[in-house]
Image 1 (cartoon, rainbow, N blue to C red):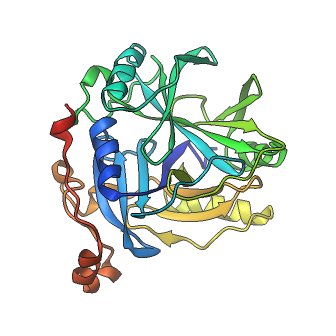
Image 2: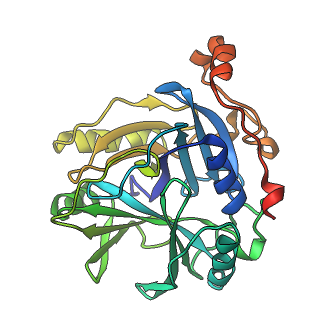
Length: 316
């Protein structure tokens, strides 16, 4: 029987200033802005999608930028670090690049036999770059980072929880994840155990609850193939006591949401139809795209959104 869930689809964060957000993820990190739209639940706020050439599931980091939002704080019940995959010999380049743009990084760390660095964006968002030779994805090679060092997509995510048993049960019994290994109190799970599907749990039994605001992850979405498999997951979860939303149309995928036992908001999102349904692949992210229900209000929505520009050439 084919797996219903195959890894991470996207990760969505709350940000502050919209222009700084675009500058960091397209300029400093070299991701492609594959879609510029609105938060469907708050139409006066952008929703940016950053990823590889086409916004392939497993590569897309998305943000809701609220200008003037105070910074959140890391703690339990949160996804505290988003990890991206980079080529095996890329960490020295990235340390130099981040230093050039005034971003402090950790020393080179080792985890499960792989090297990584850790840092934060301008809002305090926790980011890791993990060097691996086991990822053949291409990333976005039309941006500000040379092809030899480009981010390929997600490696995985770290959940900071007070306890793991119920979350582990959810992942391994109902979401096609398997326990892989434990190291220094970090518990690793994966669907296949490769870049793009890794979920780590780090325990903080007496830790303070995280405060969600700018620099915090809002939710993590997991991949399912299509609407049929999504409904299977929804039914499975509901039959086992999870409070799952109705299916929500996000234009580029459909979604259902629920909170895992540790407090992190989970989403199940479809791989279909993707980001090229309303823009040519060569021009993704260039125009503000609105859902059909918002089009009659385009002038008002546009007037309320801050103006942004892509400035990737200044980061080369």
